[in-house]
Length: 220
Image (tube, rainbow, N blue to C red; front, side, top):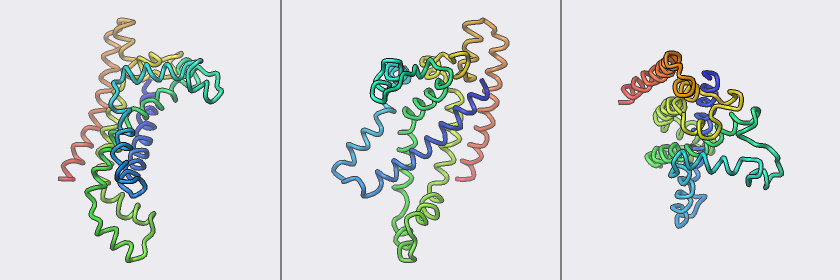
């Protein structure tokens, strides 16, 4: 369960940040006409407006044997019921439902960067990649680090999504610390073991939280 939680948190964090930066830069660029920017932004934010239970039920319907995903792509896979794909399916849904928050945070950071930096870089002959790695990333680095630490903590604590979609199955393939602790306490009534599991999760989150607080103090 600990291994699955670390994989779940790590992969989710990487994709959240990657998609957040990508979509934020697109919304902050001239690729989208100003008249349609608000509509596109609303569409991108849409997954974040749904509750976890609604997201889980929607994706369970779309990813079952007769769901729209299998119908469109010609697959015959019960994504949440197959031991090989269950964990990946839960991670995918978590990425889909949470990336808008990171997109908004990065977009706010991007809009706070002065255009003077980019104009000076253009005069010096810098290309798009050089501007991105030498201006954009350093300017939004504090936001990225804070979001990554918070994302790791939130993903480690994730219970509802995993429990509604797979319940930690099949055969424990998508079991996380959250579902493991819940099943121990409220299904097997092993409260002492469940308490120990909860303490382990709390200690991991506490360590990350200490790094987050230190980072915030340095930024101030």
